[in-house]
Length: 135
Image 1 (cartoon, rainbow, N blue to C red):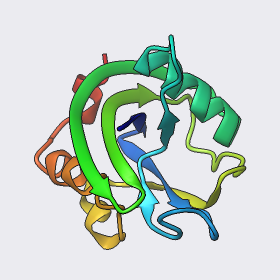
Image 2: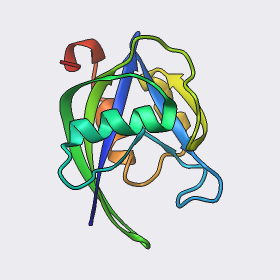
Image 3: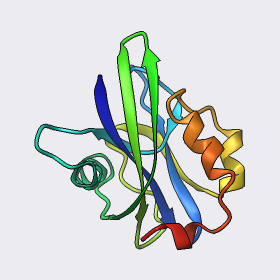
Image 4: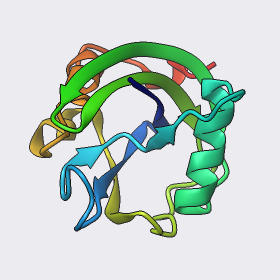
């Protein structure tokens, strides 16, 4: 089982989503950015590190949102999902993704998310005020 920290990165009530890169597992699926939690690392530390590595973007990690799990053919993944805040809506540097977009919650249904991320999309669609959930 691999533990992954994922972020619902919010700026001006929009959420950052990213499309997985060609040639990787789940290529071209959309996801909430993050990565594998390393030994001795908290999910919050992991999320901060991964966003810096993958996007060269500074975030402030906030509240825990939910956990979801999925059994892929290449292993079981457990996503620990946190809210995070970002200072601006610039499209970040893309080191590990095909593309990234800032979207409204209602727009999430228009993207083909990876199976482990779908429960997060479903839960977010029930939220009404992202700003109050951050910290």
